[in-house]
Amino acid sequence: MFSFLKFNIAKLSGKVAYHLAKHGPGSGGTYPGYIFKKIGGPESIQKIASDLNTGSVLVNGTNGKTTTTTLLIKLMSNDIQIRSSYENNTLNAIVTAILNQEGDLGIFEYGIRDAAHGIPNTVQKLINPIGVVYTTISREHIQVAGVKNPFKSYYNAKKLLSEGMQNGVVVTNCDDPRTAFIGLNKEKDVKVNYYGIETDVIEDIGDKSVECPKCGKLLDYSHFYLNHRGIYACECGFKRPEPNVKLTDIEFSSSSWDLTIEGDLFNYVVSENIKFNLKLNVPPFGLHNIYNTLASITAYATFTPKVENIETTVKKIFNNLDMSFIPTGRFEVVDIGDKLVGLGQGDNGDALKINTMFMKLYLDGPLEFIYTTPDEYEDEIFEDHYEIIKSMNPSHVVVLPGRKSIKKAEEYYNIIKEDYPDADFYPLGYDEMKIKIEKLYELAVTSDYEYVIMSGCGEEQAMWGEIKTKIING
Picture 1 (cartoon, rainbow, N blue to C red):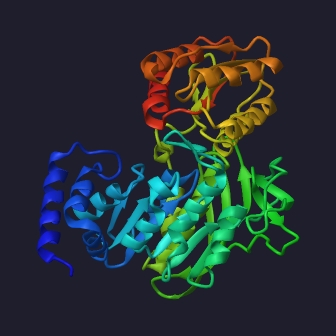
Picture 2: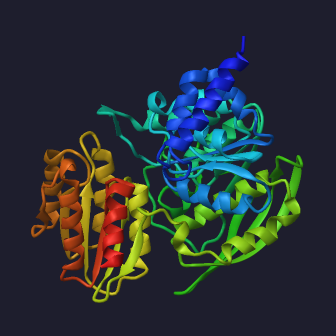
């Protein structure tokens, strides 16, 4: 039997903890949520989650979660009071936000490394979201807590976040066969809104060895947009669904990009289909942010109660967009006077590919690649990384450990050295983070090359954010 006394004690304790705790990014930390959960138990989480009159939307994926969540918050805040959490990918962070903020709708980033630590089915049951938004799913977190985490397990954990949904809408990327398959499997239970690109202006080399998520055979692609995202089909019958929201045209310039986006999708609040057409002018923020833009607009149009405001609100947000919405550790190209330095996190092949494609927009001469490596049991990530490194045709390569194992980093370095004999290696470990940051900063600013890219594995805020701040501030 549900105890209102225990619930009220948990609620009071969580609020007291909130005022005492050091506020963390996005949600004011996770400790208040932990206290509430510890005292009140699972039933209290279900009760407090149900206090959101409209419900909750969870944003998940390998890349783009934080940016998509941030953009969705900017959009939705125009129409409804919301409670939100980003960057802290835990149940405690979600509970903290629900407990200590005001609003009818919750928008929460929720990253998942594996089922054991991410508890996606438990989170789905306790929060009971009206929406799950999928960005893209790529190979990442092949090792979690020192244990090998096969990609199949990683992918299945992502699927579990929406698997139990019987109400609401799944918003998912139809250009990614993995997220599209999740959507197709949920169509029998809930509405699904797909987003994607539908223009030949964007084209990538792509990956020819993407397995069909339905039967395991290799997919046949007629067009690649970005890495494994594109137009695909399989002999088993699985194929790319038609997008409800799609980029139909894009015009590039050095100062801005013009996007044309069309939408015809189901809105959860009014329970009917709506249409919109958008002409947006945005900064040249990288091809990956086109997907984040599509994801956030699709989610906004799906869950806003003010459907008449969609075109006006989207134009207001995106036509006045500055780059401050990009999280601190994410990739950015910085002009430091005598050179351009592109730097930021690239923990998996998808992320590093995005970074290099962005850097290519600026290249006009020889390039130095400063690469921070994956860890033990992450050979697959290194293989993806190394193909991308070679595609950039760097004149010089520098290697440092991006994770804990110096020994494994040296193994990766020795492979690189076979193709780049003059490559350099600096064996700085995880416990030497301050020294590593100083060395990476020094390597970038003293490089003999006019173009430098520094990317790979490493802590988003603790490493990449600090290096970027040092380079920007001189």
